[in-house]
Image (cartoon, rainbow, N blue to C red):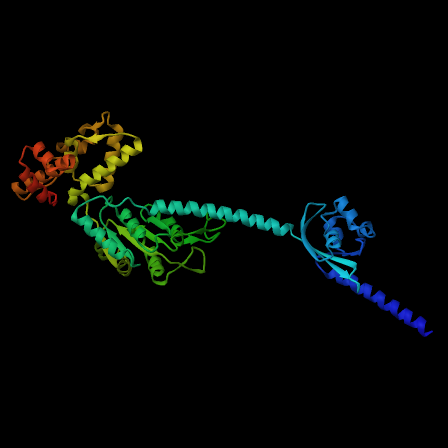
Length: 470
């Protein structure tokens, strides 16, 4: 009776153990397969059918060698364990083309013979797909980063300032001194003198040169759109807003330089918001509540008299003081006519290369350029020369290629300006002739021969009007 009771108890315990083992196999996420020492399949987890598309009743009793031959899984990791007599981890594909990592571990008896092999399978397909997508995303990011870096290098690069006047040299000296500091800069001067160009030079010479240079013309954007352009907006913040919102231009300047051109045209309500941005280094998008930290170097520019605008209550005084930590005045081209010749040479070479010409200026044409008062400043000079290069029929550009207002001074109502005396007028005109002729011949001998003066006189004139010791 006792023997029978022990047998029943043992059988009961074994049955309970089997149920517990089945429950454990069901609880484990990974697919599990158990074979005997010859590779015959004894047990599989419930997930096997989902992974391999075949039921438990089909596979039990068959060997892993048969399953491998049928292509249910390949290669068989258990077959490798039986061959090598040790634990094996390897990649495997199932009959549905999915990728797995499989680890099979042998269970040995006291004599070292394999009596069971247990394999664990983990599906890698989703992981590999994510890895591939990540690699593709990395490639795309790398590509766009390279394109952005190239664009930034083009935007931030400058050929250098063209001009030899004392005023331009003083500006460059000031820029070289302040560029490395993050102080706000205010460029003042009439339209077309190169305020944006000088801003780019500051950026290129600063510690932020690797960052973006974002230029915003406050006069070019309608007032009702300016706030959303500057600060960005959250989705659905106003009628017509994009579904995903939009990042503002101020945020785009993160880590770089923000250049606000024609700052005097900024509406008063946005002046207050800009003042807060400068003080707190944070912005809030239109329709949003979250503050976003920003870090940029601010450069502003205007062609207006800022102090008059303050008196007229059209510009905030506190914002003005924030902007003009350093103020640099860029003079009009008319007040630095000694820069016209090098600028003309620079633009002529630029457009000859652009349009594949080899054109030069007739001395009379150059003289007209020197006499003109250039209300549009450097920008006007550039446009006039590009037009002349394109429209001139001959390789030597004659006065007829210039606009009538330049080629025919009498059409402008006489001389360009009034002099205090005849001596002053003669000296100015003599200076223009000396500079023009020396630019063409570049030697004292050539200058003396062209103007039919002695070489010592040519040396004195060059020193007087060009400031060059020879």
